[in-house]
Amino acid sequence: MTPKSKAQDKSNTNKARTRVSKTYKLFIAGKFPRTESGRYYAFTAQSAGSSFKANICTSSRKDFRNAVVAARSVQKSWAAASACLRGQILYRLAEILEDRRDQFIGELILQGASIKHANKEVDASIDRLVYYAGWSDKYQQIFSNVNPVSSSHFNFSILEPTGVVAILPPAAEENQCGLLGMISNIAPAIVGGNTCVFLTNEKQPLTAISFAEVIQASDVPGGVVNILTGSNVELMALFASHKDVNSLVHMEKSLEDNKKIQELASENLKRVICRSEMRWHENIAESPYMIEETQEVKTTWHPIGN
Image (cartoon, rainbow, N blue to C red; front, side, top):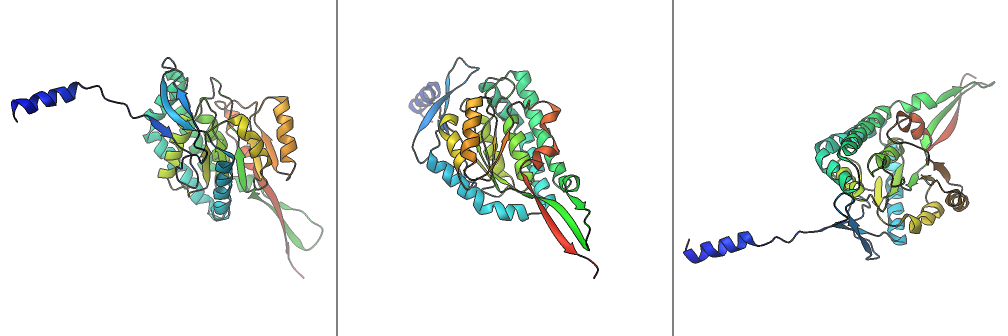
C-alpha cells in the first residue's frame, strides 16, 4: 500500500457516516408494501429528546381494503388447520420473539417505556403467546356442549370462528407501550381460526411492524395477520363500517366514539367487542373467554336410533 493510499484510508475512516433511516412499511398478505397513498409521518423517539428515528407509512382506505381481502382469502384454510397446528405456530412466534428480545426492549424504550417496564412487557408478551398456544386445542372442550333434547337426536354446540376480525389499537398509555396490547388481541383471535387486520397506535408503531417481521419469519400463513400503521381517527370509521369484516375489537373509551362505532357496525350486524377497561399486564387480560368472544356457536343435530 502506497503512502497516498494510507492517507486516503485514514481520511475515509474519519468521515462522519450517514445513518440509514428506516421506513416502516405495512404488513399485508405476508409482504411489506408501501402505502398506496405515498403518505408517511416521522416517528420521534420519546426517550431521546424527541429525535427523529424513522418514517412510518400512513395507511389509506385502499390499504385497509387490501388487508381485508388478504385476510378473507386465507380465512377458510386457516380455520381448517388443526388446533394443534395453530398452537404450534403461536409457540413458534414466542420462540422468535424470545430470540429478538433485546430489539423489542430497545423499541419499547424509544416509544416511551422505562427499561424496567420494557423488560416486563416483552417477557409478558412472550408468555402470552405461549398461554394462547396452550389453549388452542382446549377451548372447544370448555365452551362446546352436548345439549339435552326430547327426541332421538344428539344435539351438539361447538364454536366456529366469526371470520375476519378488525382490531383498533389500545390507547398510547404508559402501561400499554405497543407490544403486549397488540399480542393480547391478535393471539386469541387467530388461535380460534380467525384472520385479522390490526391498526397500530400512531405513537407506538415500531414494535408492531417489528412483530410483523416475526410473523413473516414464522409459520403463520400470509394474510392471517395484517398490520397497518396510520391515523386511528382516519381509519376508525372504515374498520367499523366495512361489510366484509365480521368482528370489530376496539379499545375506545370515548362515549361519542363508542356510539359512532356501534352505529357503523350495525350496518352489517358485525360483532363489536369493547376492551377499553382492560389492563393488559394483569391476569384478567389472558383468558379463554377472549377466544370465545370472536367465535360463533354452531348447533348440529344428529339422529340416533330408529
